[in-house]
Structures are given as C-alpha cells and as structure tokens.
Length: 448
Image 1 (tube, rainbow, N blue to C red):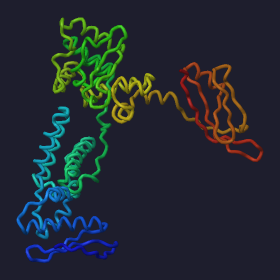
Image 2 (image 1 turned 180 degrees about the horizontal axis):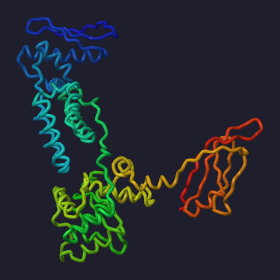
Image 3 (image 1 turned 30 degrees about the vertical axis):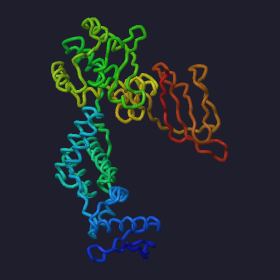
Image 4 (image 1 turned 60 degrees about the vertical axis):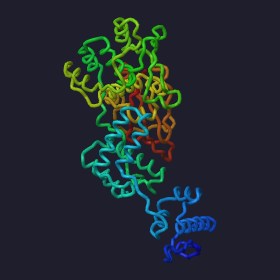
C-alpha cells in the first residue's frame, strides 16, 4: 500500500508518497500540489504497485495516465523501481521522421532548409538521445554557427528551425523543456546582401537574353516584382487581360494563407513591351507562359551566365533584389503601401523589413532639401512672415519657442530651383516680450 504524507519545505507545504517496492521502503517526493492531485497520484501509484506485484497489465485509465505524465514524475517512479526508464528518441531519427511527416505540406525550398539544418544539428550534437540536448549545448550550437562565419540571417534561420524541431518534441512529451527556447536567434534580415538593381543593369541583362521569354523573366522580376521561379509556374495567357492592363499571379509561397493564393497585378509600363513580345511568339494552344519552368527549377546558374554575357557584375540574391528594387521604386513613385502590398503579395511589415531600400538617389535628394545656416537677429516672438501671395505658401508664425520664417529675399532663387525655403527658428522669451533668435536651420522643401 502507498501512503501519502504532507511535508514542510522552505517554500511551503509539499507532498510525499511512501511505498514498498520488492520489500524495500521507498519514497517519491511530489513537490507542491493540492491534496486532491496528490491523492490521485497516490491512488495511481498504488495500482501500479499492486499490478507489478501480481504480474498483471495496468488498467486502461492507469496506462493512459502513465503515458501522459511528464518525464520528471516518470523519472521519479522509475528511480524507485516502480517503472522502467523511458527510452528517449534519438536525435537524428526524430528530426528525419518529423521532416518526412511534414514533407507533404512543405515547399521544396523549406524541405531543403530542413535538410541543411538536420545535417548541421546532428553534425554538432551527434545522434544522441533528445533528452541529452541541454540549454547550454544549444547555446554552444549557435556559437558554432557564428564561428563558422554564417551570416546573421542564416544563423537566425537555423536557430529558429532547431527551436521548431525541439518545440514539437516537447509537445509530444518526448522532452520536458525546449533547450533552444532561450537561445537568441538574431535578425533574419541581412542588409549587407541588399542591392538596388538599376534600370541600366536591367537593360543590359535583357539585351543579353536570347529569346522573348527570357527577356520577359527579367522584366517580370525587376518591373513587376514577381518571385522567381515559383510565381512564373502558374502564369497563363488566358489570365492576362490586355483591355484592363492586368494579369493574375499565382503564389505558391502564400497560398496557405487565407485568400492569398493569387493576386491581380497591373501590366506596368516598363513590363508591357516584353509581355507583348512574348505573346506574339507564344505557341498556339499552349496556355502556360513558361511551360518549361517548375517550382523546383533553379535559375541561379542561368542568370549568372546571363550576367557574364551582359558584362554585368552579378549581385547576391539576384531575383530577390530585383523584387526589392521594384518595391522601392513603387514606394518612391508615391504608390500607397497597401497597394504595393496587394500587387507584390506581402505585408507592409515584411516590405519594410526585407524589401524597401535606401538608395543613392535618396541621399542625393536629401542633400538638395536640407542645408544648415547659423545667424542671430532679434525677432518679435509673434511676428508673422507671409509669402502666400508670391509663392502659394501659408503664413508661418515665430512665437517664443519654435517657429518657421519665410525669407523673401533668399527665397526668390530657391523657387526658381523648384524648392521653397523655410527657416526654423528657436526664440528665447524675454521680459520685454521679444525674443532673441538662436542659431537656426534653413529647410528646403520641394515644390511638388
């Protein structure tokens, strides 16, 4: 028979079970819990004890309970000889089984990433039991990736995949805790690999192509921001509406999201001639625009050879940076964010994080807009300076504190250059009701 005892600890009251196993008196510390839970465990333990002594199988409810208890309690019962120790799944076996289970719903690129991560994880830890992977060793695994000079984005991705693997093992009660839970992932974005693809470079690539379909691939990547090759696979001539200037793009990457399996994209002005040329030479009765391209097809070697033929130094992640450059152009053209999101098939957060770039043109525009000037004169704290009649600007006041002044004399030249010149003023109030202007900033605002 198993007996239940209440014990006092430094943190309060806890419970302990005493029982006889093979004639020896043993004790199982349950820790802090309420009396009802402790009584339930004692009753189950007592049933296990009597079944073991009689050589009988456990009742179904007790067997189910034993299968559901965590490894900590199971370990305590096994250490007193009541249960055999749980056999832990081996690391390689679990990871490959999990990948095989998910393979039907995973994209080819995701399966490839899983394969790379499995090889890396098993290569570091060895084919050890899952339970033997500790948080300390998980942190060392991340450090080994950094030491191997993987990019920060690659390290973040591999740690995230490892965390996903072990989180599944925890949900299946193969381990008690995820050793990667507190391991830092880092940024998934590698800004060093971003590259703005100019229209000159795009033209060189297009001119080096050998047929209309090749030229269309480059145009779709740079001028319409398609994901290549995956979004080329589903393109059909029957889904190109020449009258409305739109076409349908099927997106395997986002099809698992609600109503994001396809999107409507405009036939951009830069894209139109290449789409029309490809249509003119398309085979009769073939609806697919790119019948020879599959989602698994790699186009890296093709564009590398194309760039070499065009005399263009190829940048990293060629097609992703074409898409990123297209996104940047759309935003700079004043297209609202939600419209870019609809046309390119990603969220505003993803666009800001992965696609939108700061280009040299942005810096050039900034140098034309802002310049610094220092000077000091007395100014009435509530005096208004108006240029509304001459230049269409609203009156600006300079009260004690911060204000804006339009300098009429100096603004004449500025207007001829297409900008409106305003001076930001900081005034310190005085007892006489006037203020002394401190060094100010002249702001050049474009006249749109």
